[in-house]
Amino acid sequence: MLLPPEVALSFFGVAVLLALSPGPDNLFVLTQSVLWGRAAGLWVVLGLCTGVLGHTLAVSVGLAAVFAASQTAFLVVKLAGAAYLLYLAWGALRAGTASLGGQRPPRQSPGQLYRRGAIMSLTNPKVTIFFLAFLPQFASPLRGSIGMQMFLLGLLFMLAAFLVFSLIALFSGAVGERLQRSPGVQLWLNRAAGVIFIGLALKLLTSER
Image 1 (cartoon, rainbow, N blue to C red):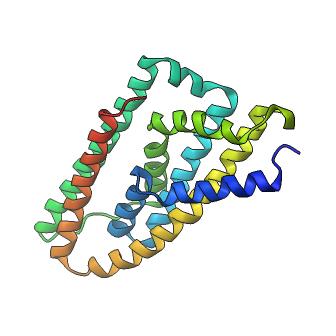
Image 2 (image 1 turned 60 degrees about the vertical axis):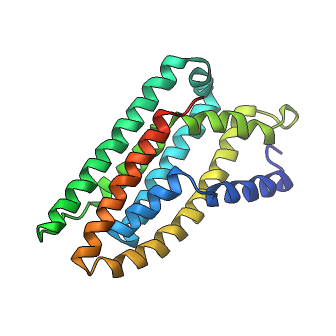
């Protein structure tokens, strides 16, 4: 058996705890859900889970080793991720200015929100390298293909992330939908989101492999 039940359960428990711990992804879900509502948050969660699937495939076929070994590859992806976060910060701060002028910023489409989540995850090379270090601890050559075991473990991690992030989206989205009834609160929500995105970009830029 590639993944015995006891290994799957222990890995899933650890994955849930990791998803619950404060980090860029669950913070991203929280801010987007507060700004745009529960449904929007769930679309972001689906995008993030797609990114997790991408990292899983990268680890399974060995691409993660390239990022672990190549400083240039790591730097390129890191810069792309930071640039995207700064782009989101700019959009949030502009939305805050529009709110101040009495204009309500246009709502994001499901496709836009999904892409935000996917790009947010895929442009963070730290996730790929984390998977490269984390998943093999639960794999064994005695159980068959290591690549297939890594893929199955990645799917379990994706399931754990989906459950935890969905709960965050539902809770914070419900709170955000009430807060957004006030234009003044909407202004500060957008400004706070902009500051958070800038902070995440700076954290990514200063991160090491």
